[in-house]
Image (cartoon, rainbow, N blue to C red; front, side, top):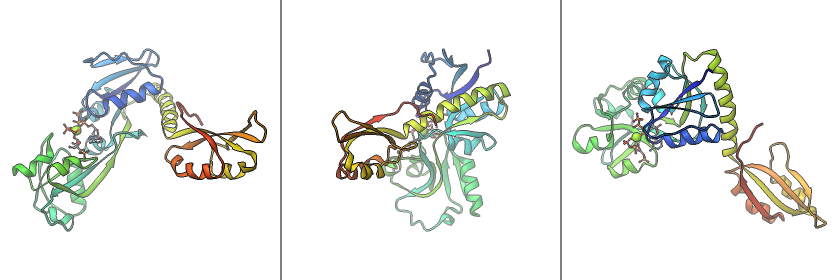
Length: 285
Ligand SMILES: Nc1ncnc2c1ncn2[C@@H]1O[C@H](COP(=O)(O)OP(=O)(O)OP(=O)(O)O)[C@@H](O)[C@H]1O
Ligand SMILES: O=P(O)(O)OC[C@H]1O[C@H](OP(=O)(O)OP(=O)(O)O)[C@H](O)[C@@H]1O
Ligand SMILES: [Mg+2]
């Protein structure tokens, strides 16, 4: 039987969320620690546990068909590799930062400066575009320490909360790109495996849709229903069912999880009671 071969990060920030999204897609993986390869019991899939930074090359060579990887790594090393889905986790930026004491005006200030980074292509392309020449020092980790030990004048690295920059007395001055985990596809994927990819994408899309939504149930007196319904957009339109108690209805709907807190007060004022908000496991349109 043909199986689709997926690469995920062996250990690190993407590992857990990558396994979780496969699990939420109903794909069980025998996940013995320290394994390099594992099979799924209920989906034609083989999982390869690899270093994030090595994955673009494996995709390019067709050793794996698809991968869950940071978009930033594809921009750095895999411009030729396509993205099938954005996955919504591991959101971060790749930014240029300088010591807090540096009086920064514009990107021209990087002219002739020493920049420490693990993302040389990203920096070179960004600066070339702006007509700036800098001197790159390529290091593979702990980049933020470089200015403090005299290795560089500036750095380019991943920024999320900004606390690593803060701890190292640095400030972010240019955001070069924003990134999240993505499902990337090998240019060498076969037609047969592309069919399996379509099945996986269908599942991923219903999982991601569900993650962004909540199922809301509430009770409202019938004379206030119009007001309550106006506040609630549904997938098609809200479901209204009569309660056993006369003059009352139960309203069911799906709502964007971020929008819920915006309308909760208005719902209560409009007469809604007994509001329940429930997670949704899968959402198929
Ligand atoms: N602080 C962060 N917040 C959010 N996402 C991040 C953060 N740091 C890294 N990421 C994302 O997670 C990915 C993996 O980061 P991680 O530090 O685990 O691996 P790595 O050391 O870059 O890679 P490798 O697996 O090759 O050792 C990054 O490429 C980026 O997309
Ligand atoms: O803005 P923040 O929230 O502080 O996150 C940014 C830091 O996170 C990443 O490092 P990580 O913790 O993955 O360590 P690593 O250098 O060992 O990969 C990245 O390389 C930054 O150093
Ligand atoms: Mg890291």
